[in-house]
Length: 219
Length: 219
Figure (cartoon, one colour):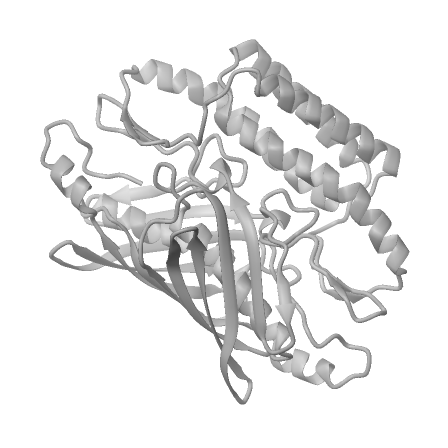
């Protein structure tokens, strides 16, 4: 199983990998969208499938045994490149680019297309939950109070249209090992979904947080 | 914007499209996984990207203007093929194949791989919410009480490992236009996440449900 791995990589190497894998993954996001919306003839669809299978076989010639995991760099950064919301290497992730403040605040502007649909033309209610779970967790982490989701409550004020959106979150309060975070999803007209969550730091992480060099934030 | 569209297609045509697009989309799911896990050399990665972009361009030669939407067939079935959880044509969707009972119960056995990761080796908390939002909505719909998510509450009992999982949901009670559904996500050891949600039927749908031929269930 993948773990929180301490990696001995330079910032230059991380940048090199990002420049290589970021565009690959973006090309797959475009392919996902095209496959939902295409209306080309059957032969073109079948030929596309055969080519995709050939590309996949080449990429699998050498691969990780399991999932990507989360990797820590010596500088205290982390790479959650397989993450379903922010993962640089994960085409399921939109991906969100999340900004943080040490006061325990996080925000992101992003766009959700056809791959995130629930009701026609609208963001899937569960996708709103997926995005907000990540945002609230990032706010908790940004404030130095990281944790895994304990509870999460979503209130859907109105439908969220596919297209440009913004998500924001901040720490509401901290009680011992529990961090309470709140946030929302919004379109240009205002808030569509509100969220609150409790994030709890597992015991193994509490112990490791006291080690020198262990990052104060993790996904 | 995509809508709930009434389609004049035969069951045979739907089956033909499913046999065409299902395998295409599955090939993209495999590609998504391979891109997260690949360790091949840089040139192979760049060549893969170029081929993917070429395939995408061919698929985009003729395409829907927006998202897929949800389409109703004359027999009362529906096709939510763009849906982020169950969409036959959506590579972001695992996809879940969901079984229903008219008593208002739904369940699904499925597998979540590297693309659904949050903490290392574990299902993203937001992905658990995504899956459970769909499951609770399907239970409400199966019982003839469909709706859009009003509120959703998740309780994370313990971490959910990537791999084979089961989700179940059922209607707890109905109060006017509100349907209360509950459910859970489980691995082989038992429940990992519990969910409850309120699903509310929008007014336009209440009016259409009284029309003859309008399906009693919608996504």
